[in-house]
Length: 190
Image (cartoon, rainbow, N blue to C red; front, side):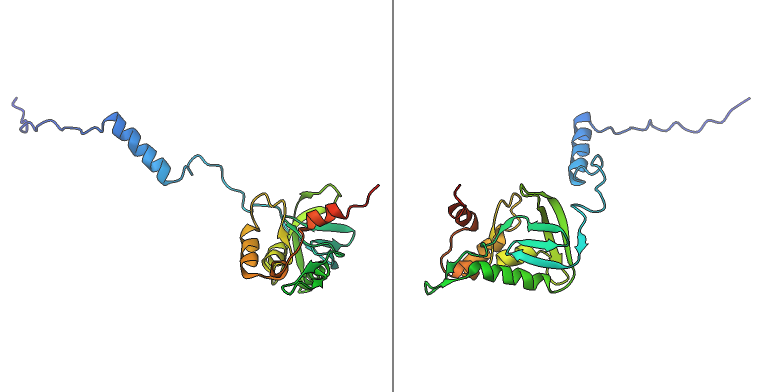
């Protein structure tokens, strides 16, 4: 019995990447995808959940009162109500009152939402607050020169303060004592 055999084909050559080239390729892919393959899935919402407040009023230039809760705008410091500053002509003006009035006007715009970020040593809620018109009330005050950046660990308000200072807005128009320094000097003795 004769069997037909097709002509023999040359053996196939398999090309293999050298192991170092394969490892380099995998590293490049990992970097290109930013390590997302092994990264945890991010939460759908980052940061604290904002709470909508009602009956909000300004206590001073950086503190709000809503119901029984006192809210301190985190990362900023506004002049105290009794604090005075100097304008461009060197005349004294009630900068603490100006900051309080501006905060009152900002929260009067409409619904106020605040995202709590802990509490301060006085029990006040530390928060970033917004309105329908202003995405960050604290930033607005700093940008207008009515407050300064204060214990701003993440640098959220640094650019706003620099811009207000460079443009000579609000407090930066004349001379002022930083609110924290003013409070230290006017602390009751006893």
